[in-house]
Image (tube, rainbow over all chains, first blue to last red; front, top):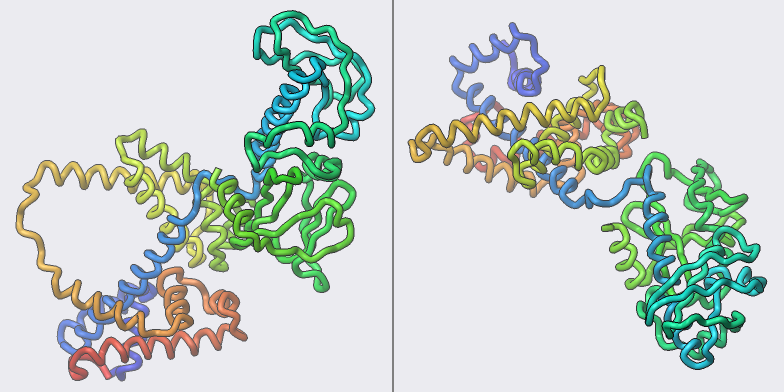
Length: 289
Length: 179
């Protein structure tokens, strides 16, 4: 005759489906003739069912919190493509504001994009100016020897007649002084050197995770590659991009926290958590998209 | 992450792999059910059921994959949805207001057990969840919970279960059950 503990173990195995058919049948037979064993079996069945139901409910709650529209780490580059597009539109809108302001005052047209300030300064060729209707936007190709990125020159003509003027390249600071507030405060003119963020943008698709005893939560951006130091490959992470007042900024999302990524950190640097509530809110928005 | 990596992580009870799978296959599974006369809520529910069925099977190490995970999930979703459609069809053909089985005693017991579960510490709850639902091995429970080894996990699980039994039984007359 088995003692209570042995019976309990048998019941546990029975309910977990690990007993053989013969053992199961024997236990069921015994339970039919022993009311306490039967009660114990029923109670344990209820307990295990409750445990399973609770765990299942927890996991379902976890799944319900997942934003199914969010890209996973394997296609995080979609963020970059989308954000870059938004950024381009933002810069374009920004440029329209400034061009409109300048043309209304001086009847001159300038070409170039503020995101490539350095290159803009070297831009000296005379772009063709197309005939356009009132308030019509036209994009014409610059005939000068710019890079591919610079070849799209945006102009806005106020009159329906041709404007054959020598393009004067205004100083970026002058433009800022003379122009109204941009349409979207999040997509404002760059204040500093944007070349770094442009570099970052173009090469953040190259990421390597390094497990290191010394550096457990660090990163560096070196040789056009983002190195993440720590236990990142066993968990999910995402790279997010935001258009801030200082240009494009990149963030690492990891375990529901956000960390700033800076392109000039060529030395191994600690990942710094983002504390600013507005930035966090914006990043959450980006994630939802 | 390839399928083998996902399976390896699930076997260790890595819930991030579950999140990953959920997101990755959501559209395909949910669209399949919606195209077959399901609402989005029904589709989501069926997909979650299918994914969790896959999770428990894979976590317990009982699964031998012969196809891609997405193919496997798709077939579970199809089966579950067929069952659900058949259940709904029966409901409309049979008398809906027929006598329902009395489940009040079961419900009452479930409430008592849930109360006792809430009195149990978080660690104990997790161990019991991982053992009875996820069916993780003691080695994996030890690793997940940060215990020294499988023996420690086994001892803890034993004590936690004993504590839960005691709590539940204290709500009933002790002579009704085994000591």
